[in-house]
Length: 274
Length: 112
Image (cartoon, rainbow over all chains, first blue to last red; front, top):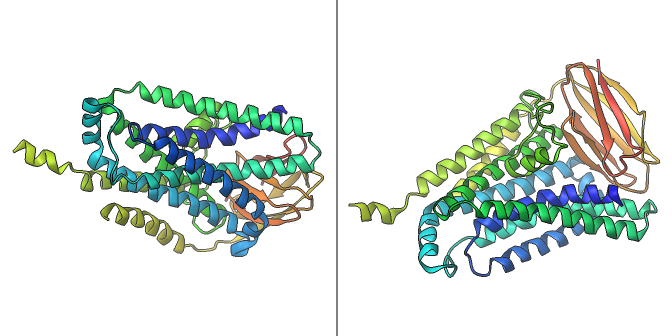
């Protein structure tokens, strides 16, 4: 049971951290629980579908279907986060001010919640499909259903608890800086996803590695540790990145930051200041 | 709209980089998974070369090839065969394992 719980925990943790960041970033949005819940549900269904078609995906694209699939899912999530981040850069300050004045009843309208629903769904799908495949293997390997059910329950409980702890931690950020913080967190999350996507493309030999191991910080902070894995999921920490991963990380982060600057200028403030 | 342009730009950049790939000289290595074990459990590849690693899973259950040292992970479907690329590697030992059967599926890739 312990082995099952540990694997389930590790996968659930990564998805739960993404959900926590999204949950924080949508603070004050009415009905966000429904949106995020729908994202999780869609992700779980997707995970089962992906696990059931693992053989097909693996054989697609001359054996590189898995890498292309993972990279596409990650890039899609990156695009959704970029869209949302730029939108929030325009409206985040207004929302924070309104929240201050009115409490929770704010921030509906044009906000691209669907973008974040997709981010949640894709995170759950990616991590969840590995859990489902693993559980199939366990069941076929003769593990008892009590072990499997217990392992799932413990793993999910642990992962969700860690995600909840992150959320509670984020809530301590003062409201003035809150959406700036969550927006930067989303930016780093997207940069990390782009780096992971690049790693998959190198693994498939579709991208040059530009140095197969640019540095090795596993001695300082191993990705096997809870902190290492948490930082991996949140900001894309990689102990042994290929050069091209670093390029993708920086370019993605820079593009989103530029997007937030260029399109994120609060127009009302300019007229108000005159 | 403009923000969507940005998202598209990111994807386009990614694909553009992907297009400029040259295939270098590469070595090939084969692994078999049988009864949740890697055969051979120790495999030697040339250092300084890209290595095409082919893994043939003869079990009826899925496995996930994973290595922190190689920074790789890939699901190997039941009765399936997968290919992945590693390196070019510096000389050394690079442990790998099957994430779904860690107790037995352990191996090491040695670059010389």
